[in-house]
Amino acid sequence: MAEFTHTIDGKAASSEKSFEVVNPATGNSFASCPDASRLQLEEAVNAARRAFAPWSALSFAERARAIGAFAKGLAVRVDEIGPVLTREQGKPLGQAKWEVGASAHEMEALCKMEIGPEIIREDGKHRVELVYHPLGVVGAITPWNFPIILACHKIAHGLYAGNTMVLKPSPYTPLATLMMGAVARDTLPPGVLNTIAGGNDLGGWITEHPSIARISFTGSVPTGKKVLASASGTLKRVTLELGGNDPAIVLDDADVDEIAPALFRGAFLNAGQICMAVKRVYAPEKLYEPLVDRLTKLANTHRVGDGMEPDVEMGPLQNKMQFEKVLAMIEDAKRHKVRITTGGHALNRPGYFIAPTIVADATDDMRLVQEEQFGPVLPLLKYRDVDDAIRRANDSRFGLCASVWTKNVKRGAEIARRIEAGTVWINHHVGSEADMPFGGFKESGFGRELGLLGLASYMEPQVIKVPLAA
Ligand code: NAD
Image: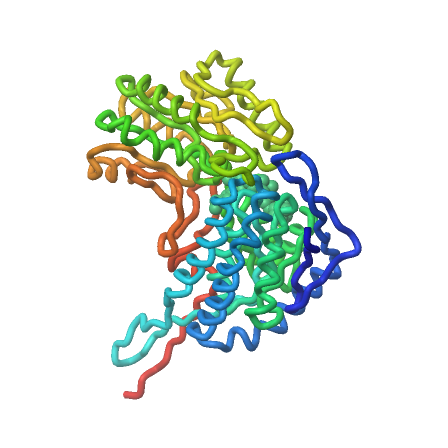
């Protein structure tokens, strides 16, 4: 395997220390990753500070062109980066390649938006203008489930707005991100995008750093709270994209055969390790057993295996801790006397594989319903009437996304407005689009990424009031 390096000030850099990266399909380490020192973080931040003045002086169109070149550089390396992403993350190769290619595509879409300046008022006496300024150096921190696409959302809008960046991937999945840094060396001015790998300590050093103006964080709720506390020391601007426990509410007019494949995909894609995956399903009495039956059949034919093998649809859990957490939630569910209609166990092979699991007769008090499982296990709950379903869907400290499944989309949209979640889909679940601001209610997040709201969050608004000659 090739040597992996940080990118600092447009140059490759290795570190004295390194750590091993494990392939979750085998449980064995397969590559070594440099572990950035505090001094290397200083070098990266200083490079980003030096790059800020010339980069922020460019127009949006000039920055869009440079980011477009970076995106193209990424797109032509899909076949190089994809297999590394599969080995470190576990997802099937086709999905890993999709992630890299879609990231390039989304970056281009994100750099087509325009923001300000705008005239707020012109009344004969004054002209009041609203203009936007970039913030400076952004510290971007990403998780292990979608390391490339989540980083690219931050890179696109962070850089397009005129900021420069220090990006730190998760220590579980650092390698594809470092390869992306190598693309930046060839396509962006030095220092504009620095990628450095390290452990959780490096994350803390970034969030407390006095020369970093903004943090864009994607990860779990407990870490998000630490990030917010740490960033408060220097009053950094912060967005937090955190965990979810998304409900899907099936209405009594839904066609079970029609909706089941999309519902299944929304729950089991990436082995359920998606912030906005379906994590609990609420179904009415009359559709409950047919839905359990249909989802069970889909789970039974879902092909699980090493993502490098052809035709695999679902890989392993990404790491041992997550694997054990999901198994513990299954054990907790068994104590609640649920019906596990398929799965409910680890696969008898090396690596962190769990069989796709359908849990019928789930109860509100189970861990699987209360917490974010982040794994291939789907609980189904029965509801009395729509009010009961909405109340229980909202009875959560999470509020990332949700969905309503119905033939009557108007009724679905009315119900959507009563759900406490940042995005509610009708007859769909999972996905991000460049023009749709993404983020959570309640503990699922703080602020928004994507869309114009996301772009604005990488900028500081300024009002200029000009007296007009009489
Ligand atoms: P995590 O919170 O454990 O780690 C995320 C990142 O934070 C990693 O890079 C980690 O090294 C870093 N980190 C850890 N401690 C830190 C600290 N004290 N200060 C600064 N950085 C620190 O999350 P994870 O387990 O990698 O990811 C899974 C979680 O991410 C799930 O809860 C999932 O729902 C969430 N997620 C949310 C979104 C979203 O857009 N809302 C998207 C993907 C994943």
